[in-house]
Image (spheres, rainbow over the protein chains, first blue to last red):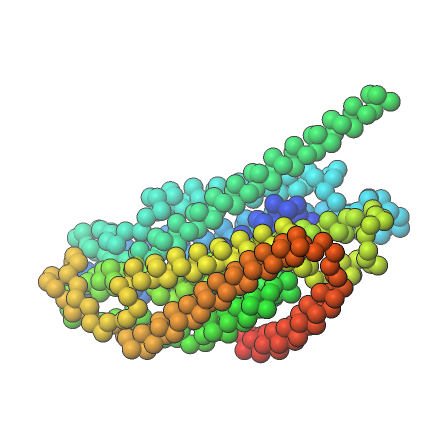
Length: 219
Length: 262
């Protein structure tokens, strides 16, 4: 059970997505998931071991690390990836429900179970709104927890059992900052893609509805 | 989910590439990604643990390491490989879009559609002409730009491609100028030079492919202008034979790559 599961899940969603949805999936795969696995994970691998405080007092380093990193950047990143990919499951479930219904009634109820119309359109729009919401929530969480997206070289800590204010040094701060900015950029890109897909779908189906009504009135 | 997934994604593009494009893809997977995964990652694996500074001052090592290595070589290469592979996706998307259009035509029962079934549309290999030519050429152009940008960034950040044995550091909190020693500098230099050399070969292949495509484009135009009637069947047969040979070569190469990477 690993990231391969997420990849299979998103590949399954790919079938029922619009063009912009497919671009979104490609961005998530390549610029977020792949970068996370081949590059980012290794940077944060030994973050606790390499976190060094200018003191010999036992326990001080542990306490300071816990104070400055309540949830590590890399774990928040992983959670964000999972939460952002999950709303697409709603679409998969709805299509499976439709196919099940067709099988149960033994007749063709829909033009095509995967076609985005009727109830599936609303499910798709809800999944887009949820995805965007999760992205924004995680970005705000990152910003609030770490006072912006900077990773300082030095943090000053004075929590018990540290006797006084103690200098603590974070390892690889520049590299971590570069990858955090990368995360924020790709996150914003995904938000833009989601919003454009949302507007495209709403626009397309309002025009369709309007035209149907016009034709009905003429008849 | 790792480099193998990227290989699957790009493998689909391989069918619609030129012969030089297929060579480029093979070089990318064997001499860059595979070398990165099986060798380079091990060499840089212990980089901060074995980065030793001649001081007991806590924090000095961390700060000096961060000063001299703002972003590790390994991560920079991984990003370079990801960015360089991505333009091929443009071609994949364009091909998928064309296939989608042809499937739509087929479903509508268009008389002009010459396919017998959907399977044939799925398996069809598109020739690089028309709008696909522009997409393909822009993807090669972006590849070149990304390669050049990353090579320059490398050179700029690390003052050349050599890894020194000793670095002198006087960033705070180091009390004075302190000697810091990098682990495995010679091995790292060897791999750096290797990766740069293969990067340059890839740049040359891309330039050659670009020239090939431009030459083909201008030849086709002049041929059309000089002789409006040409024999499409004859051209197709020769090209199909060459493509089959290329596919056999690249498939056997890719089977070797899959064997190694899995």
